[in-house]
Image 1 (cartoon, rainbow, N blue to C red):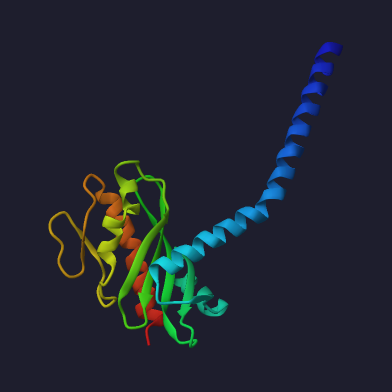
Image 2: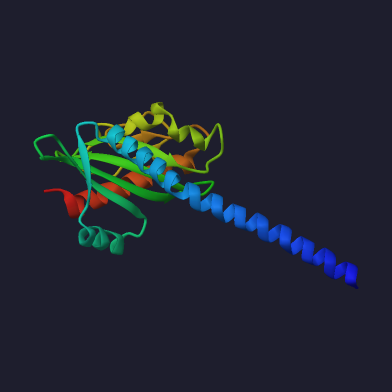
Length: 192
C-alpha cells in the first residue's frame, strides 16, 4: 500500500511541475501571440482594402448592433486615407465550410465595390477546399458590386457569380456566404 501512495505522490509532483511549466510558457507567450495575430489581421486588411492607409475599428455600439443581428461577424474596420476620408470597410465573418469554420475578410470600397477578399483561417481539406486561399479563387471577387449577393456556379461565371473550386463546392459556397454576410452588413448598416 505504501508503494502505491509513494508512486501516486511522485506522479502528482511530476504532473504539477509539468502543468506549472505549461502555464508559465502560455503566460509568457500569450502577449507575443496576440501581437502576431494583430499584425496578420492588419496585413489582411491592407490586402483587401489597399487604398486605406489606416484602419479604425467600428464604434462599439454600432458593432454590437451588427453582432446582435448576425453573430457570425467577427470584426468591422473603417479604412481611411491620409486625408482622413473613409475609403471603405473591412469586415471579417465566419462561415461554415466542409471541414469547419472559415474566416473570411472582405474589403468594400465606399463606392460599393468589393476591393478584395481573403480567407484568413480554415480547416478545409488540403488540395481541395484549402484552394480557397489561392489568389486564382480569391481574385474572382474583386470588382464585384455590393448591390447583389454573390452566387457560386460550376460553369463560366457572369456578373455576380464565382466559379466553384473543382471538388470543393461546399467550401466555395461557404466562402461566398462569408462575403455575402459582409455585403449585407455594408448595404444595411454602412453604405451611405
